[in-house]
Image (cartoon, rainbow, N blue to C red; front, top):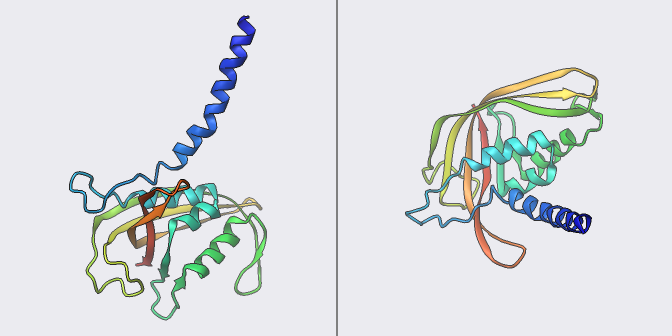
Length: 194
């Protein structure tokens, strides 16, 4: 009899794990009303999601994070900005775990893992002036200045460090959940190297 109850308890515990995982996975998509005076928007959640996507090397999480109008702008004004599809293609190759060729045609070893050593907000989130975001029709955009640093651990044992300063842009978008209900979540609208 004790064994039967133990098995039932174990089944209950094991059946709740996927449900808990579902709620944990949605923790960065908390519903809020952008005009709700009680709930202050928290665009900083996009930085948590960005770090999580990189460290887990999850292209699905990264794709879900990027707004359809996403743009990555380089510090070099002569370098053409990456649109969303360009950025996703580049990141997909990095996350793939497969050896690649770089732009010069040289072998580039696969990335085994990515670890952030810093991700710090230098200038806190603030609403953006209407003329600053020219690549999107979004009107309620937030921006922050960050300093970041991470290490690419390559499969050949080498390490490559990357870091710098960026302006990041975030926007709250209304999203349809699996059951048809709507909720607000933050997406990354753009990044500008400094």
